[in-house]
Image (cartoon, rainbow, N blue to C red; front, side):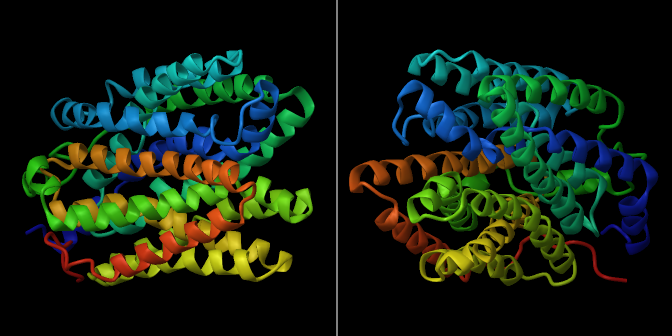
Length: 411
């Protein structure tokens, strides 16, 4: 067992902090903030220009998730065997080419699907799988907090900023120019950062690192386990429902007669509130070795949905704050759950499948709500169903089992 002193040193070393900062910058400019996060502000102008219904353009995130599901396990195995640093710049290049290509769409559904595949491949290579591997390698005692800050807190703040920037660019120059500017600026920052700051912990940098990596289940063992099906299944449904409501939030609020500025503010607060969840959650799971801590964050979605459905216009902002806390916590703590339930032997492979499932959920949710809108002629019934799905995941989370791989004891 790694000693408390060595674990503390590994968690607080300058190389570890440098790697964490590099990961944070890269994740701030990754798929979640710059595609999934800002998708709601592009949904209406893109769909309107091409005459698409509310369910067609949301198919792009779904295809991104499906692509990640197919490519993710292979990419994860490569990361486990070959390391992260060499392929990160390649992944970022593919991802930003895909993001820029959205500005070239001409209404062809086939072209939309192709661009979504490119985004899915690049975003999977240069996404949470790689950065969670780096954080897990550098941090052990403070792993939950580090993962919460880097994997969820920073992207949530980046999303809040990106929403305002994207909306401003769309208002000034249109959605095509907005996609181009975001892609170019992000590429100029992220690729050099990945080359200069991001590196994995070596055995000499992290005492006990070799033993930690050797511990754990294989991918096939993890995927057949009840723990995987329960934790990842609940997480997938939860983030799908939350993202579905969020992506259609502006349209829903317009239907209800809520002021557009207030709705946009609430959407930004959804992202700004996000960092609090994984930071507090990470702090708690580092000190209380119980999955009930994680399960408590599944309550945020039903609470927020209750406010949105029954609280009137005054409850729009607090409702979205609860959404932000729940969404970012469930996403941000997923790598922690993987490391504690299944270890790190095949960590990247398991994380790849996990993030693919979460991405599919985030893609399917908006499509289903869009279909519901088109079928029922409004959002009311569909949003009530989404609230029911969130409540179901809270009940499932209460049945999470104790961890198999605990962190080092507190000194």
